Length: 411
Image 1 (cartoon, rainbow, N blue to C red):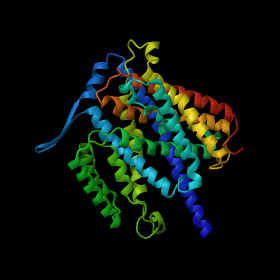
Image 2 (cartoon, rainbow, N blue to C red):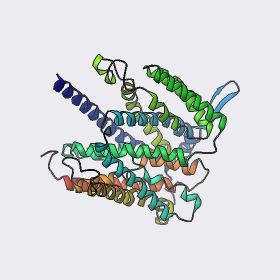
Image 3 (cartoon, rainbow, N blue to C red):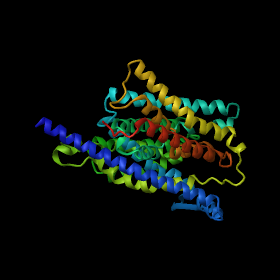
Image 4 (cartoon, one colour):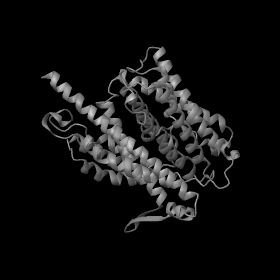
């Protein structure tokens, strides 16, 4: 009986993992298409219309109370909160039941992700030292775009060991966790006490729902909307509300582990499953379209060598490679972790480069660092992100293709 249940559980997790990879692969393709359309729009006669789209005023009003923002900020603050809700649920699920549920499983990707954030940030800081405005962007190259990185990896097909895919996914999850912490600690504006207190009250309500055994995701989402408004008004970035909300949605239904023994669906998994296609194929492409359009008119080699794009590109390519690879090697050397089955160091070199595909999260942090602080580098930050991500993706793919050769995984 036990062996049968364990086999069923493994099959269930394998199915979820394969579905996740398929969605992320498709999402990466749509993301690339959205970014390409944005670049065409920003560098054609459609450019005025593209900028009008980004700055289009949008208002929600209830009596005397209202929120007025340009469409770009509704996308970055509103739609991206749903993305961070999904990220938060993925983090919770993986840490409680998935690939990060044990110290041994989590140690290598956690250490690799730490190195992959610290070294790129240091590379950017060295490149832009002495410019206080530019230094606000130190965290831009520390991010990894999970959709693009997995999408490139999956282009290599069945020859890629499953353990290598799991490693990349785990590194990206820890990377997202680090990005959330960076946003909360370093990109928070002046705090409003009353709004923060209001947000705290909504968090208490979420905790009460969780403790009372409420399992309907709709109940949590109803509280999540005013929580988002309160966090937005508090001065903290509104997307943090999505992460907070995720950690209160129960992963287990009453009466069984994740509700599976009584055929009761897991509230968290059900919501995650429902949101994933909308985020991967809808929200992230919209975000990419709104943020990736960089006018190239008049752009020269000198612009690429400006400290901001240069620091970002070097951080994404060189910083991620050195950070992820060196941290992984050190963890294995010290006995803190071991390489996954069927994974070799040449594979780790290629995956370390793929971690340098920053794109979505890098664009998001850039918007916090520069646009919301009313600092303008004339799109040079986005130029650095696009250049660095492209180079990292191409090099990572080429090295992995060489390292994997014509062999299939496990052969």
